[in-house]
Image (cartoon, rainbow, N blue to C red; front, side, top):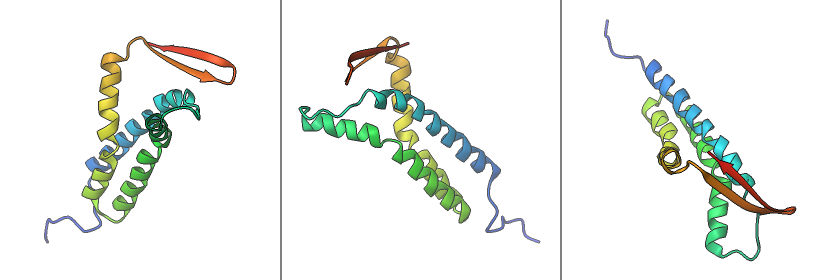
Length: 123
């Protein structure tokens, strides 16, 4: 009898890692809701601002797409690929989170809405 892992057998630690990293990615969507709520399209803005706004609004596609790919890889028995797919969004989330925790105290978000200027103080 051999002690080699069966082809369909997966690591419990990898499963816990997949779930934990996807919970972190899910938590990153909470501040995204706040930031995205202040972004309103303005026709007079320069192109680079419009591109940044589009990237911020499209951000949820990254963790959702990577989560789907991770679970597909997990289902196919490709544990290493699943771990890589679920880690990819953290390459963006962790630096932003560290920046926010370091410099984010007392941040004010100001935006223009249909009813006028509004400011929200975070921290």
